[in-house]
Length: 105
Image 1 (cartoon, rainbow, N blue to C red):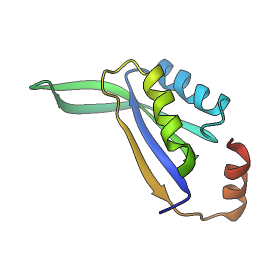
Image 2 (cartoon, rainbow, N blue to C red):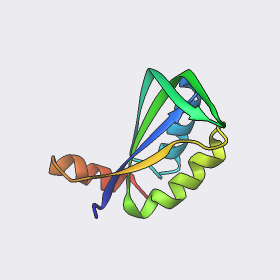
Image 3 (cartoon, rainbow, N blue to C red):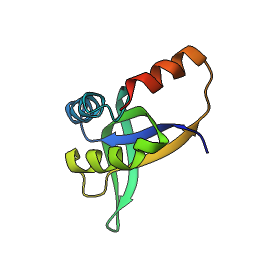
């Protein structure tokens, strides 16, 4: 298992993604938040197919911080069941991953 994680989160608006991303960095639960507006999502929810515009939020964190980060995102998120998906990442640029480690709690 990787020590570092990418956390993929979808939000309904750019403002919500920005608010959550800033809170994660301010709380040192994430070293960085990337926001990608303009995503179109097609999904099934409560028996019906929906199509909505969303914003993607990707945060970089450590394995140790995934649980508190997930709880914090859920507390700030407007969705009843927010998409929070954790992906393993392997270090590439050693200097970047040193910065990542220094930026977290």
